[in-house]
Amino acid sequence: MLGATTVKHPPISVEPLVFYIAPCLGVLVAFGLSTRFVGEKEEAAVETLLCTPLTLRELWLGKVVSLTIPSHIASTTSTLALISLRGYTVNALMAVYLATVVPIVIASATGLLGFLHYVLGMRQVKALNYIVFFTLFATLYLAVRRLASPAIITWCSVNTVLALSLAVFGVTYCLVARLSKERIVTTIS
Image (cartoon, rainbow, N blue to C red):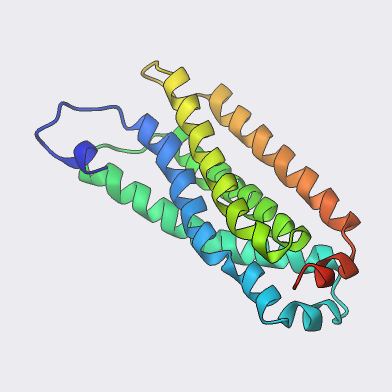
């Protein structure tokens, strides 16, 4: 990032930065905040939450939304600051990508992490965080490298990322409904 923002280097296209950095920063912030899923298990607060009239799906969805909003704000603010430091402007397609696709990518990654935190035991959760996190980074990095053309953010790439993120979120949403409260309680220890 420092190399991309210094004046000494030749101008670079801002699209790969937006395509890659915006969702990665958002997931990084959500990754840091997602410790609430684990913290509730460690503190046994999840048992109390499971006794409330909320369904498990509502509880999961509330946490995903509450982690996605600040993560998206931090991601968008940081990305726009980086773009403005380089003297670039945001075109309409980048604005659509930042406003609609990035929060869905963040929500799908956060939702998947939250679901897996509920399913797995405490020992497996720590390794799982890094696996999900680095898989997302590697996938986005490979997509940027594969789309080596000057225009990386196209309607096709935006729709592809959106479709994949919605698919991950939808599958996770359905899996949460099948999760039993007893399974969560038994993975606390």
